[in-house]
Length: 124
Image 1 (cartoon, helix red, strand yellow):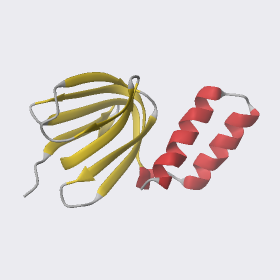
Image 2 (cartoon, helix red, strand yellow; image 1 turned 90 degrees about the vertical axis):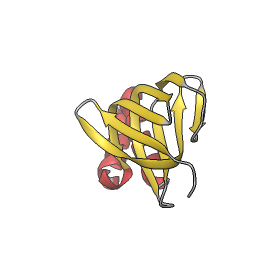
Image 3 (cartoon, helix red, strand yellow; image 1 turned 60 degrees about the horizontal axis):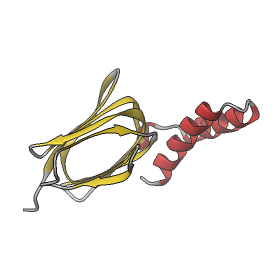
């Protein structure tokens, strides 16, 4: 059996995903980071972007994450996000409309959120 780490992806309003994984890739203020079992302890600030979780059973979970923190110690990874959505929860047409609306309103923050949601869907 491959080495595993326990992952908790939590948003401000709910637990989004919990389980065993072999690799988690997330975007931090220092750049993209990949965390595997046995990684050095870390604490970082999450940037908006897709988080990819390679599950122990060979599957992939992708979530759109908007801000928060990442912490790893004792083979436990915590992703504490301000907002997080699993890619299969995202309505693509709604996200595309939100992106167009944000572009026409010149709302960079809303544009970034919509873009992250669409990238998460594309990576699932």
